[in-house]
Image 1 (tube, one colour):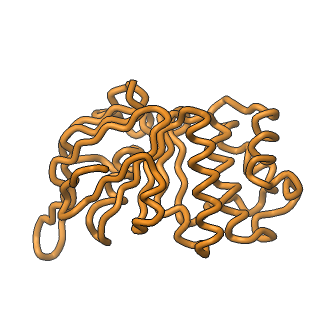
Image 2 (spheres, helix red, strand yellow; image 1 turned 135 degrees about the horizontal axis):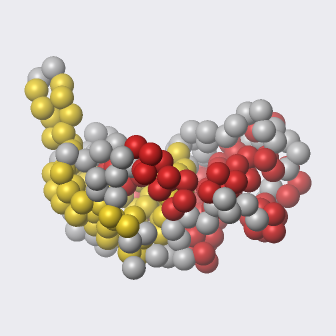
Image 3 (spheres, one colour; image 1 turned 120 degrees about the vertical axis):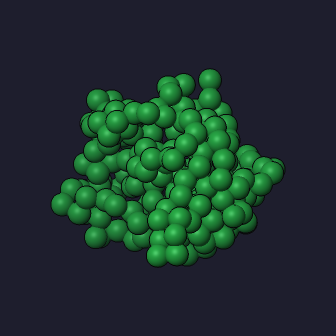
Length: 222
């Protein structure tokens, strides 16, 4: 079963100059445990495509399956439930809850999904190098440490699909490489599909496959 399937997705936006097509019939399939890097210039539609896959935006046309479920015509409530239960999101901004300590941030998404497992939280904290930081607040962490918390929070809920939008964009190269290594390692071990939006071909080459968006159309993946 595919973790994510997009079939001829199209999306346009209104502007002062008229209707601007952003996605033009994009199709892709992402299997469980597989990582796909989506590259493209700014404005090529990468983030729009990721938001559509997450149910944060609606496509103008096309069909979407997540974890085998057709969500093409789901309403807001159903799409929110899908994100809680099956989809993990990681962004360039860490989006941690500043009033919660690291341990509570790690458990937050799993509690929402009804899958809180203290043993899994402990395992992720250890693998992500956070075991000694559980009683700290996000503002007391470095950028790389905060992004590790964001990854752990996402994976603690056992999603079928992780959507990551420039997750290393706010980190220096060494920290970014370490964060991506951990993300790839953990998603592969858990059989979680990963769609990684990145402008870096160097990082993209570390994924199983690569696809390139140009003028709203998907180029050949490698």
